[in-house]
Length: 331
Image 1 (cartoon, helix red, strand yellow):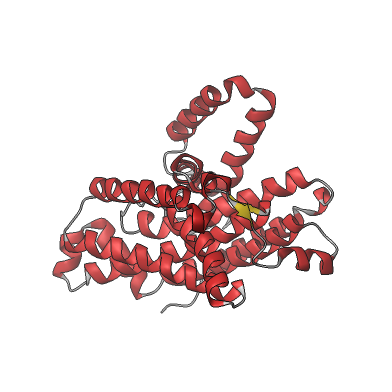
Image 2 (cartoon, one colour; image 1 turned 90 degrees about the horizontal axis):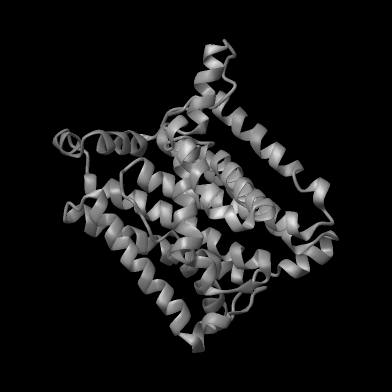
């Protein structure tokens, strides 16, 4: 494994430091705290999808379902096993990861195209969402249930801040770990294999790359990160509802965020999440009746003028101006 690049680590550290200061001006405003939590949740979902879709062309369209497995699994396992939810959080994330691994393994074994993988995972998303709604004795159905399994309330009392602030900083730590892990991953042997698979799967296999193994690894890592993040969706609001993990609420938004921010970039998920979530919330406030139409038009413009993502567009612009490594250097 090569050493981690200092410019990229510096950029990640700078962005995380800025994000760490973000809640300070809104400590008394729960609405804006919730918005900040939502940005980090979406960024983490996009970071997970970036590994499996961005690097191995496996389009997972069940991000919401996998996140729901993490959230519901954490709560149910805590009740059944009688242990702290911080233990069952890891167990639920592992279950989510194994689902991602199974999907990737089957897809690789059967040589499914990106379109077929998308169809397969979309159907799994529908199945998982129906389970969340239909298994009322376990999940509470469409009415959901109160969610404080991670003892966020106790942490907030000790810290003297709101619950959402605690959730935000927990997510920020998780985001830092995920980003550093991502930088390490794409510069490892696995990262080289991912790149070979993305460029030409047959050629990669011909030079000895175990395509099934590395695609399965990407599926596991992506689903693990998404499943680990899932419980924090409910922890932020204090209530778990199946609607929070639907295809329209999660998958569409996350895919847009990833593409707009920049596939195969470290900071793309964060930049995309900030831009898309803020624009969406702004339109909901000033033009709620026209929100969908205006948002759709803005997305078209972004896709037209930032085809490689905002991060790469900014990097190219800084390069033209002769400003050094002002943005991340990885593609």
